[in-house]
Every structure is written in C-alpha cells, then in structure tokens.
Length: 231
Figure 1: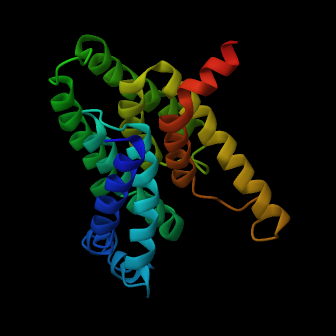
Figure 2: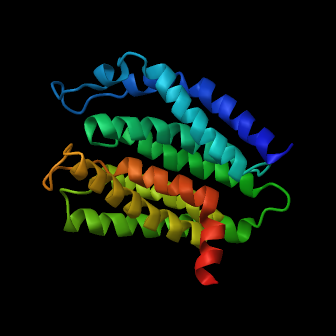
C-alpha cells in the first residue's frame, strides 16, 4: 500500500470510531455532582458526532500518512482518537480527565510493546527510549505545573507522559520538536485570541489542544525539521 492508501484507511477507521467519541465523553464520571457543564452536557452538543468524526478522520489521515505500513500505526491512531476526545473536552471544560489521559498512556504502552515485537523493529532502543521520554516530559510538565498552577494542571502533566511515550518511540528529535511546537502553537493561539478580543491577558487558555497539535506535527514532520535545523 502507498502512503496515500494508508492515510485513507486510517482516516476511514478513525472517522467511523470518532463518531462514537461523544459516548465515551458522556460516560466519564463527574468529580463534583454540580460542576457545570457536565460531561453529559458536553457530549450532547448538537452535531458533535459528525464534528468529532471529521476531526478524528483528519488526524487519522496525518498519522496514516506519517506511519504508513509501520507496526506502530495502531498505537498512534488510538492516541489520535483519544486525543481528539481530550482536545474537545479540554476546550469545553478546561481540564483533562483521568479517564482519557491514563488510558492514552497505558494502552499506548501495550500497543507499542506489541509493535516492538514486530520483525525489523529496534525494540531494544525504541521502547526504553519511549519510557524515558514519558518520564522526562512528565517531570518537566510537573515542575512547570508546580511553578505556574494557573497555566498547567495535572491533566496536562499526565497527557505529557502519554505524548512523551509515543514521541520517544519515534526518537528524541520528535520529543524535542513536539514539545517546542506545543508552546509555539499555544503562544500563537493566545496572540490570536487577544487580537480578536476573545481573551484577555488574565484569561486561562487550555493547553491540552496545543500539546496534542504539537505532537501531531512532530509525528509528521520531526525528521525534516530536525534535519533542517542541524544543517
């Protein structure tokens, strides 16, 4: 199969499964009974299944193209689906629930572990590196969350571990590019919101979507970006 065929396949699978993401969001238990909006309210937004399906399909297409024919494609598509749900929830509720961040890490660990068993995979380097990157980003984001709790939460810290696991599997270049890209995207979003007067300097902008987009950019373009920088 060509990369385009892999991209189309991953987009189709992600789009179909993305249609059911609102059910996943609506099943998340509430931490506080009267905390608005509830996950059920967030999940019942009109037209949400189609929108999340379209977003998941787009993410799946990028991942299918970037990881075409690789044994880790299932792991990255799964992360893309959970990431689509996490991005939406963070935009609506300004938090990342454990019911999404923890499975992203644990399921990713299992699927990447299975991928490490595939012939031709350098499992002795890639899988330990994945865990090292997960721990490194977990520590980095934890320190930032402790230093600036108004800007980062523990959900962001847990998401950093899941993203670090997958980016670390690809290599340290992906970890560096994904981390830098997250802050560049976050800064650009803040500038645009300020310019449009949709936010003030005191507004709290969810950082989870920027982390997810930065990771997606790294999966697709970390190698050429790193080669360009080193050259």
